[in-house]
Length: 240
Image (tube, one colour):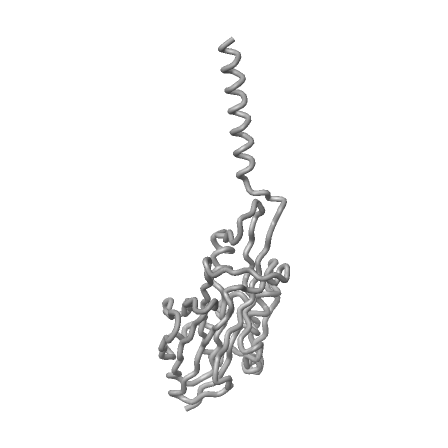
């Protein structure tokens, strides 16, 4: 009799453990996508500067960010955001090229090597250089906003192109590190952020005048990448 009771108890424990394990698994049939948008301001908003001039890169956006995937708002202050910027000095032989919106430097086009063409004075948040090809923008959280401000002093002449992209999207698509922004059994996906510089007035015509065009990017984020390549960028000329 005792043996039968023990067998019943063991069977119940095994069944409950299977039930618990299955309840802890993510429901792969349920997906939540996040695509946030970030406005970036660069001022003075000119297309031509002189050697020694200063312009500012500034972000002041609510931590309660707009999720374009379902037109909702979600506070992500505990998760945070990081933005990268690639800086290109457009050479004469970069003219008449078709560039990849996600990787303008691919296939020899547009070498992102302009980090040393500028001097930087960070005022809010933090700014650091990543080798010769990029800058890393991090944010302070003040009064419910992600805030950053860096002064950029020009040290060389020529045509320049700054391309912004979000680090979270980069790590998600290269390393599979999807964030868990809410408590849910659904699988959560973070798409590349939609970045807009100066409400889309980015002087991209300076790039187009060189005969440089953007090809369609492959994959589900192709439209976002193409948008960011044009509207999430900043082009300008520096003269003596």
